[in-house]
Image (cartoon, rainbow, N blue to C red):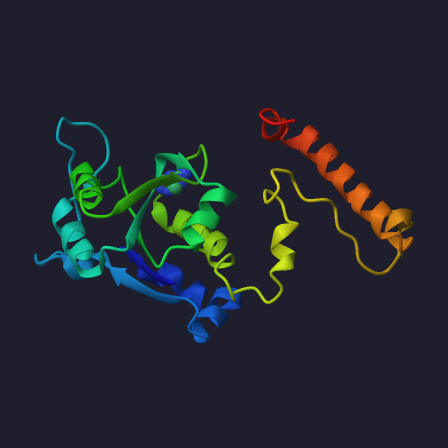
Length: 228
Ligand code: ADE
């Protein structure tokens, strides 16, 4: 998978060199390039924003540098991802879908966002997804992009050594994950649930499923509302 990120804070993404995704990049499974939006400006001050037409607070990102950045990165296969609190909520299902794409371009807006014509223009040539991380406002798209790249990247085939570990985690079966325990069996007078020490695989699987249901009912009843 090829990922391009366009941002006015390229340094933000230095952490993508480390950890699991860093390894995936070293192994060539994921190719990632970070572009400074200001490199696509021509004025002395490398201006990327201006006041909004119609008035109002804040600044809007001007379309010209974004247009050039898109010209430099888009191919017919690209999916452009626009992180915005006004987008469709990001989910595990979306991460799984995007993990199958060949090329993603993340456009990190700042201030009051990017001139809407940029998004409309991109949507006239390639697929565009405006995606929100949640119902809260971040200062820009960088943190949201980082979160999405982590969620998507770990689902790209070959990135995680043991793909079985992916199928049992939260949100993969519409339920939250069961609680996990490791050694020692007793810690600060708290024991690991007996069933996990029983060696009875069926009993363990049943217990884990029950725990998933109980946790989901308690913490996220909205996940159960549709189909159970
Ligand atoms: N940019 C600012 N807030 C955001 C959010 N909640 N999700 C995605 N991108 C954002």
